[in-house]
Length: 127
Image (cartoon, rainbow, N blue to C red; front, side, top):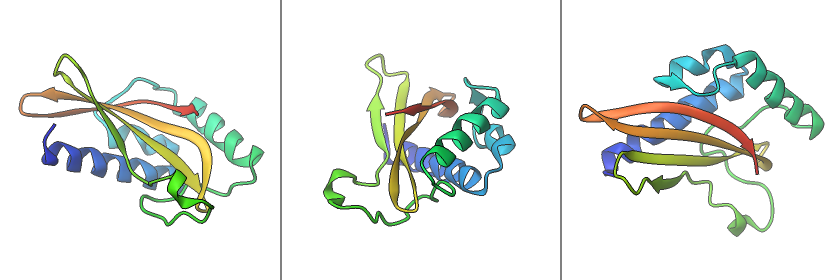
């Protein structure tokens, strides 16, 4: 995985987080090349339910400072996992709201394709 690949993946995460923050869930497919979890209404129900259940307003944009203690438990980073077969990598990002962890993880896949990356929205999964 090159630095350019990491930058492309980070930009994809930023775009998705912006869509989630603005609650424009129908725009998620425009952030990636493929949706494994295609039902944006189901995504919206899952996300809104989690936000409401935990008294959160909206997910934070990328890079919002964490307000919880101790901060060392969360590095506000994208975690990358390269595939053993060299076909690409996965990326996980722990979602926050108001600087607090929401116990949901954005999971994406990136496959090497024709010198670029195929960006795949995998899921938003409970931690």
